[in-house]
Image (cartoon, rainbow, N blue to C red; front, side):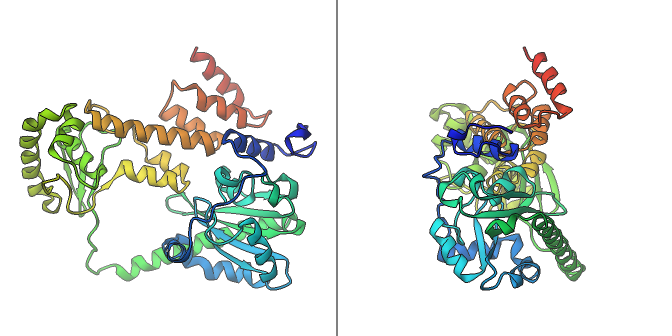
Length: 402
């Protein structure tokens, strides 16, 4: 593919690289200023490592990759989370010290949204293995380095849970490197699944742990409340009240709750009896969820599916987020507070997919969630290869939206 050499790319560049650079420019990144921020340090980094799904598989990664990346090897092995933050950076100690000058270090964010084209960030953005050689990097300070990276998935949920990367000289983008990392990722995925199955067998027959109550409001006119495995349906008004309390975890005054439900603060005389009725309903099905007063708030955590969807987006798990989106938040509700939540969830989902999703994911989003939205189709069309057989169908769909 011929490109404009004034843009900084070589005269001939791979489509994958050109499109990644275009995404960086749309985010207003500059090659001489794109730098990985180090957001995790000290206790924050240790907590992120402990909570990472990949922590349990680090012995596998070290056994397959790091043991051969010792001093003098010219190779650094990095393991990151689904958001592109590096959690472990191991290997050739001299090379690690040199890499720190460009902030390739534990705790740094190497997502595409921060540094543009790089193997870890682009692999997560495309959800596939990627090799980036020298000048293909977007950031100037990274162009003396090369890297290969592959995403790691949860075999049960299919969501992306992290990324494995090898960084060094041009030898790390040799043809054999990508299959090596793909085999390592597959071994890690199987190991994590095996550990989960073994834990299940060990706990079988023991007392079932208490699970946090869950409230499902996506695509539902009346919410579904699940408490310790038992389900209960809520009316629309009770669903609105409980959703607002779950969303605003710090609590709401009676006046603020009245504004969010009825659109005016002087509706407290209506909200108060509604809260009394909600308390009676919850007392029968979920006593721990009975709201406290002054301000109105929940005494225990409540897992709201709309919040879980946003958490998936924050981790870069776009496939899982789209699968979790059963529809708008309480679509029958006209409460101003619910409409605010609805718009935030829909807007975040759309923005995340337009910025980072693959063509197939954009097409699925357009078909299921936004059939009249042109931009996901246009973006998918731009990302697809010129000879893709899917292009004709997208063009026909766009024509039908005129």
